[in-house]
Length: 113
Length: 114
Image 1 (cartoon, rainbow over the protein chains, first blue to last red):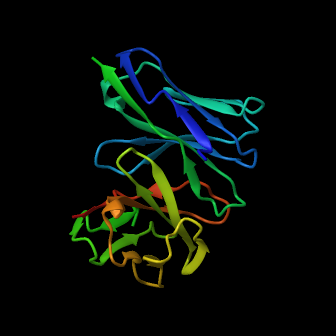
Image 2 (image 1 turned 180 degrees about the vertical axis):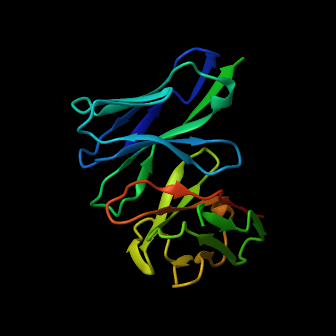
Image 3 (image 1 turned 30 degrees about the horizontal axis):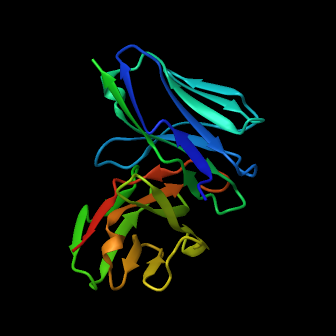
């Protein structure tokens, strides 16, 4: 059972455009939702995270929007740059399950110059 | 250190051989997590430690996998009698405790079982 569903699997955006990646979850016990960025051959790097009592969080060009009633959250990358080309993973954590990360399936983003 | 360190970077084992992977968490971090990433990018949680104590091992295939975090030593993940399906990248992550959900990942160890 996939507890965190991520879409799309791949995304192509022109430089300067907005990249949008969506995730949906089922477990209402999740209480922390991070996004990770992974470049080929590297480990995932924590990008931005949100807790369910907040509807939006912005850090630079990256914004998380969170809809608790719909059990959905999304990552927006504004002014996308070729250097943003990577695989992005949403994840969720519940503190009554050992703080383990439950990952979405990943989105491969390509930003064209 | 300021980064999670993992060794070796690559490991090749014949089917049935033993594989041992190492992880040094960020200094001061009390939680260590092991994840397996297979070819389709899917991450699978294996085990977590709070200092040297197993915190959660619900993801571990216990018949062949074992892990330890001993004081003053890198953490280790050992696979006895490797199988072809064990081929994956194994990531270690660490987290500062208590109550911090931020996990910082190492560069991973790519295990290839032939």
